[in-house]
Image (tube, rainbow, N blue to C red; front, side):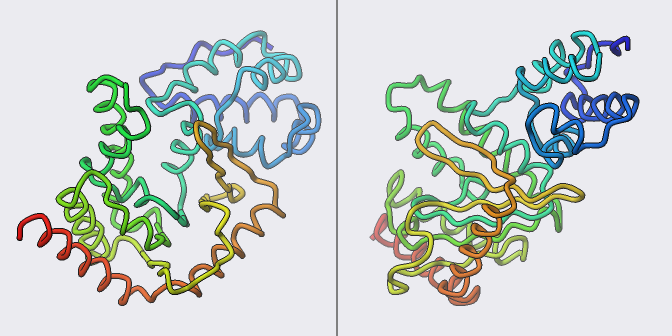
Length: 279
């Protein structure tokens, strides 16, 4: 089977590559599960590649070319679909996030990336990379603030965040930066664009003490859980793993403050930071 022409990187390479994969698979008479078996992945993973919610890595591209008899089409074009402005370990998650219908996230140490101000993001990125150039830091900050533009849409995706009180108490970038960050967080809540609950210290031990949680739901594709460490990250669609993460998240929301009380705490802390900065 002759491969189509190269994808145009200026368009939407991942979506185009997914459409070509679906076309080639159907032409070969294979279901998603059947193709997944030949690649030793799940049928849902093939569906995510076709939907553009997962990145096509070179090893999968080579196998697809062999199984689907597409010459070297997928191998040649997976590079265009994989280009990203985000760090390699986070790129696939960030790009999946942009197509999600719902995002549920628990952050124990940081204000969630989608809700950060530029000043707060700058302080975080500088802490991660203390010897990086100013240009490199500003590029990371711009990528992070540009991610938040998905919240410019009036209703989608739904973002439901549980933020640990520790993230609000840790003075990141100075008190003025924290005051601005919490005012921004409160304003986003007040325009009814996001749901935010604070998990207070007084909640004591809780089910997610071992780390953060991020769950992303999609239209017509399985839920993904994202696991992140220092310089590492991976997406997981195993149903049992996703169920466990969702249960943990649900238990956290039950332990967290109500939306109203969370907003009151965030606004009070913003005032405290502002008054301490300008006595």
